[in-house]
Structures are given as C-alpha cells and as structure tokens.
Length: 89
Image (cartoon, rainbow, N blue to C red; front, top):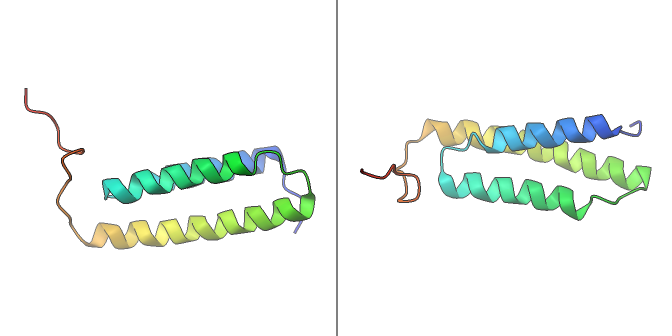
C-alpha cells in the first residue's frame, strides 16, 4: 500500500471518532473514544512509512469492527445509565 498522507490520517481519525460516538451504550462510547484518541496520540511521531502503513491498516480494521459493534448495539435496547439521564429541574 502506498504511503498515506496527513489528510488521509486525519480523515481516518475523524471517521473513527464519528463512528465511536454512535455507540448506544455510554460505557462503550466513552471507551471507544478514549482508545481512538490514545492510539493516535501514542503514534503521533511515527515517521517510518512501513510502520505507518501497518498502523493505518489496524485503524481501518478497528473502524470496521466499531461499525459492526455499533450495528449490533442498536439491535438491543439497554437502560440508560445515571450519567446519561437528563437532570430533573
């Protein structure tokens, strides 16, 4: 695979964040968002094109996994946690 540009990396990051926000469960949603942010921060200074390609392929696989899990999560309803409930005024 050809070396990816900065714009492609940012686009992949945005897709991962957007899809992670679709989790119906608060716990899964916050976990996925945190993992995406931490993963990209951890590998911020990777310069080796081969390593970058491997990391981007893993991120694409994770995006597909998140999409599947979000779809499955929407099939089953769950009670909202206390954190998600709107306050009574």
